[in-house]
Image (cartoon, rainbow, N blue to C red; front, side):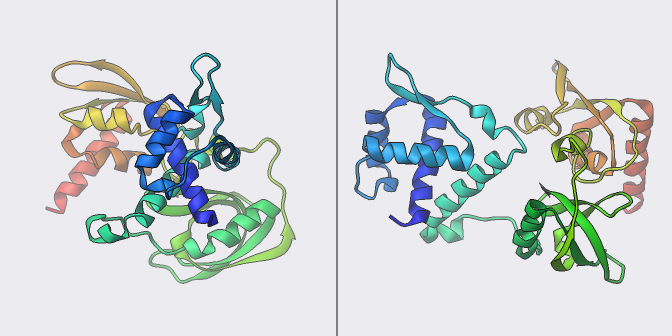
Length: 295
């Protein structure tokens, strides 16, 4: 079996168990036979075991079997919580598998364009892994390109763009891969600060813009269908639903309300109103006034 097909089968098993929650091997095999994934082969116990080992290695998912019912289930579904690399890998491989099996429908599956910069991912990931600084040629919008020597700390995907969190020697800096013209690994090693975790670094922010904006308890009212969008895809891990009535639903966020966060709220138009604190409400008001001047 080709490796790519084996991975597709792993994705099929994971998503089938996620959908049906618990299944015996016989039930899995029945679904397997009725699906194009089977290639005409049965899902026997030995084949299933090989896939379980691969699923654990690829996605960190533990699939266990209940003694009484002999049904298999995913014991740690939290491994795919928002923002984890395991969740992103499963989503990416699922889309890849579906598209591979659906080339005849290419005109009926519409995707978003992915900006440039992905060609540097492999080099940057190697530099992060080996803890070596990289030299990049970088061009901000509206500025001349220049070279920078930076320590690559972590990669983050945000709004269809890859960003690199790095340290310049003096401060943290975030660079968009689509503005990189060249990336080269150097022989200059670096060490991460003791206990540093990228997830913790970004935990008080939305997006990739990090600055000295103070923490705030932001309360918003969501109108119309907007509450449903916020419930199904929370903006931030601190998001909490406080109350709901016929007019609006109230949500709160404990966050640094940076430009990225305010812009996201503005993208919902009149579906979002910032209630407090007053300074954040005023910032939103001023942004709306400036926008109106364009019209």
